[in-house]
Image 1 (cartoon, each protein chain N blue to C red):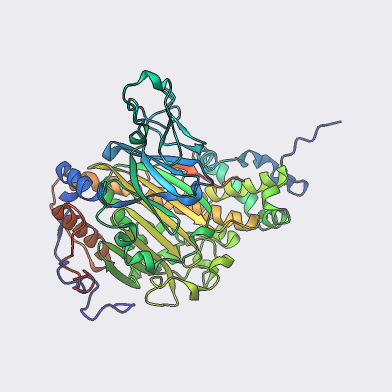
Image 2 (cartoon, chains in turn purple, green):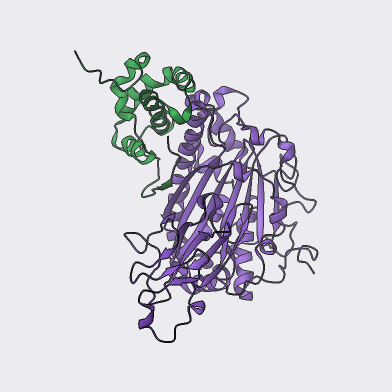
Length: 434
Length: 112
């Protein structure tokens, strides 16, 4: 019996006719040719989030991002006007990587007046223009204006910096993120600057980790020992049902109940959670910035359920933001490294604590998150190796796994189209902009 | 005169044997957890948990951005307790079960 109402069609999945309900092939998650098509049709065409504006404190602040899947290094810098710009991290002289420290393949960050090449001292202004050539008179037919750093399309949404490797992006960032760009705008991201950032190389296709984080069907089982015995028994017998699922193809979201913050009965949680007033759902005491759920952006808590706990959004293609009712947010980013491996990055973002108790509550939320992430990540390797064995070629996805089905389908449509498709066969004409 | 080598505030002298859990970074705290026996973690947990409310009350009296060294050590101790709590309260072993080769690199963490 459903505890939460489903659409009139009887299921979330059938609400989107054309998405199908049958078993699904996972060949898209290990085939090397398909992986390369994903890189070309998706990762080299889409806006990709590379971090927050808070990382660029003042003019001349910069950081680099390595994109080995595209054989590119990206330099993100704040210029004198305060504009965030991105360039390929290549000196125009003889191709040396412009900004790096110690190890050329590692990312770095810092502050500078000009960008100076380590090799022969060519210097670039923060807007990318070439400012200085060592022994300029030794060169032939120099046109400095044509020798600026090669720009990368760069734009900012709500403080998140995005780049697009397509020299002529199909869409603006706001168009690419529609309707999430507007529907999530106004969330106090800028106040949640107390950040933990972790990364891990995971031996699975990038889509498998998205699969793991867009369904909570696994939670009562894989994570059952994280709860108290009584609570995990209850969770396992009930299973998981989402409050709401919605497709904004290629984006998507799932809304889930929470109710553990604070728990109705202290016996539901572990002793330390009661003392620190914190847990997987974050600190129990909301910061002032989000004290009142009335001010949430329109796309959050779509069912307006009183037990709402978390909304999890996939911002196509590889970025997720999770909004917790308790007043903080998580991000996940998945960078393909190969057909069977990816780099997973995550940030936990809180309003800066005012005292030691709040600081400890945040630390415990991070500690707890990490315990779950370890379980999730290792399970992925077990999945990757077995789908690659091809002993079984199609797999069962239930209604609570609609976002897994959707993400793979949206990848398929974009690979087929060679770029963002004009429409998706499962979306109503209005959503497809027809 | 004996030099005072205590690392924790006077009111928490009983926790002094566990002062080596006051570690600056998450990585150090996590590795100490992995390198500890369950008996060691249980002892740390048993000594610290009953004092946790007092510890937080004591530290809350200071400006978080200007903690005296001994209060800072005390707060770092609670961060280590966060790590040790999972083996003690849930896993009965130092590592997350079935976590195999999984590891996380801390790229940035809030300073204390």
